[in-house]
Length: 627
Image (cartoon, rainbow, N blue to C red; front, side, top):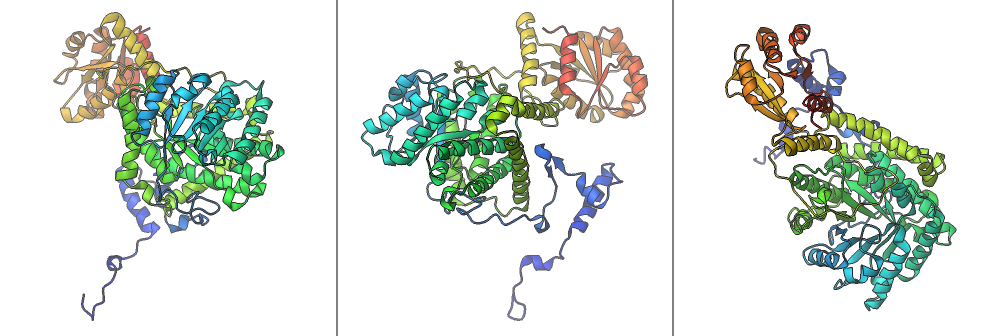
């Protein structure tokens, strides 16, 4: 640029674009897709995605979609971060979970983690974990003044807390410099077990320990508001947030009634949330959680300095799969990234094989190295609230906070968290949410890579030593892969009994270009149920299909072709397959105007994108008499 032609921003060379112009471009794309009637806002709406909690994600966000200012990091409402510096000084706390019942083995894994990047220990104690008497051995060699210890002791909380505080004193380190969480969570225990016989005693014990920590060990928090129980029962993000708020409020009431000031009571709580592979929803959930709790603390009279929520994010067990567990590494990486970007103070990345039993050393190393890469190589902790300012993230945070607040108000209106758990109100709400999500999973509207999409039947099973059974009796524990896992188990039983998996013959008709896509679709569908697919290298027709079907060894078949080919050959091939002994004949696609003729010829069902895959696969296994 010369002095006569001053340098201008590159954008100045282009005309401004507006939403209407973008919508017209969308209309053109939709017309090519057969949705010609959609125009303007209606065209934009066809690209929107419905999430749980009544939230609808639009395809485009602009400054017009802005929400109330989220404030500054470290200041109410703490949307952007709980501290002014965020995690930029030392990163977030890398916290790993340990569930061994043998103190010696627990100690070995604890030391291995602490020596290789982990900064705090999350230890299961009591029922399902290390015995309280073995806590000292499990923590042998751990510098308690350097590594924070977080307990998950359930009903054994009081004894485990006393033992840990004794160990702090015995170590010689200044107790006031200790950090961690004793993990008292009476309402979480009620949710997990359904047993409220000792709820009052547990509340009182937690309050006494909170007063002791406040006076003697201010770096140690006594109570954990663990929302994982509600997430793992099938709850949505807003339901997880709403129940955590109701739980936190119940604990504040107990602590202040017991004599603690509101600021000290707030400082005794640590909140635990699930991080999923839905990165934006996880980021928004953690940001919304801080905003909501800041409002609760403000109403309760807490000072701004005590109103920031302390957060521990844990990668979701609901999203973890038992088949093709290696994909879990990818899921937990995205979840861990989302937790860090969302501003969690501590993050736990569960090992990829955690759904199969006790994780091995390799899985634990991958889990901790995942966080090391995010921190040290991706530098995620070097930016405060990296998602802040995104019109989408800010809007999603606002919508999620509003939905969670409405649910929180429902719980409070029902008498509070304990009453809502006792009455079954919470269980019923979570069950309804999970039922709707189960429908999406069954129809593969929510795909599961390696399970409902792109399964690998030849993948050798990954075997692990059984993990201690988690406490139960209360809210259920669900997994996304539950239904497909049952189908695959039926296939495994057939393999064990007969030496082969159940099979489906893919009858590819017409030119390769017209049937390839539907062959791939059908193979993907049936393999999700553990049904092996068999196809001829060349297309078949009415004359050759019977012999090809016999060679396949299959008992059911699926026609794969373009709609035009179905009109020419479909009925004849279906009839030939039935004559050849096919117990069921499926057809990939939804050919228009041909359905009655094809059904009359022998087609039993049509499989297509969005069909009930679980029903199709279950009925196919039933027909083949798979136990």
